[in-house]
Image (cartoon, protein in one colour):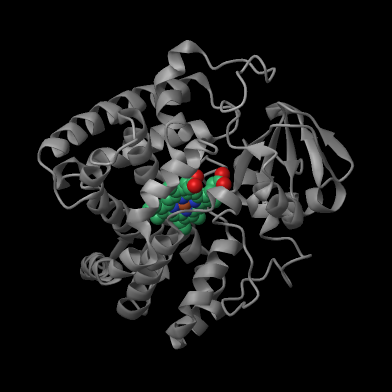
Length: 396
Ligand code: HEM
């Protein structure tokens, strides 16, 4: 197998050996199939995330043509409009303005106040799961918890929430490398439906405000309607996709390392370091990209303006230059500067909330399902960037 093959199920299942070869032999390597430089060492990924000569977009400084890039096909416009209006795909000054507005809803105090609410939700889901005698942990616990939390925060009415996962999954297909045309067509359809839905809801809330984030955002000056919709979609998608996968990948890692699971069951006070370690050990978002806005030099390679780098988070998180014995799951690992929440100006806005959700669901499962065990070996979904399991079938 080649060191990096994001379209191969075998690589998606076991990327870490390939990463080791990249880090050792070719830490900044040109990858022809996606036309990007792969960056695999922790030091470089961390530095490039903070380097303002790179950006999540270039459209704040140049057109596609000026950057020497081909514009996306016109029929994909609804997807790109939605995507480019969320803060993640903006750079300063727009990014600063959008992030400041949304940050008000995610202050440490506000997020901390959600802890008991999240815990109650997690307890309820786990009680129901235990009463049934187990099942698919992803569908029954890992997904509904973050989806419910973020939907409640934004103010998506209960009967509409089943729409969110399919829309999100269709949109997130575009974040994989070289998505095929069918993926783009599905993402465009989902972007149109999701935008129309949120436009209707936001207009309704503007006339009849409730105690939720959509109502609050409709009252904010200096936020266009497209930005409001882009922001809500970003929060709804980012607010659950990775959390679901940390839960699934994390339990799968614990089942494969029974000594660590036993230790955690014996001493649940280890949960905070365990969660950080599970996020490092099997990184839920394996890669993020950056555009190079002016020529840069990385480990002797000149990377030109208009080129793209793929920052391999999963590899950075297994770099022995930073982590002792990186292939070992160690739930007591103290020195753990994993990069799973990113770094620099786009550092995950939802990190404190994600940590609360993970502590609540892992904690509830440890306490209420002490005999939780795996029924069959899970399969990976095809996605490499957003990497997670199809199902995790367990019994008690
Ligand atoms: C374990 C779960 C999560 C992981 C691993 C994760 C990871 C990340 C990463 C790596 C980024 C930066 C991407 C980049 O630099 O290109 C990011 C950004 C972001 N995340 Fe998360 N995230 C998680 C949960 C959440 C939650 C629960 C929310 C919302 C409530 C959220 C909202 C956001 C937002 C809004 C951004 C964009 C920030 C900006 O552009 O300034 N995330 N996340």
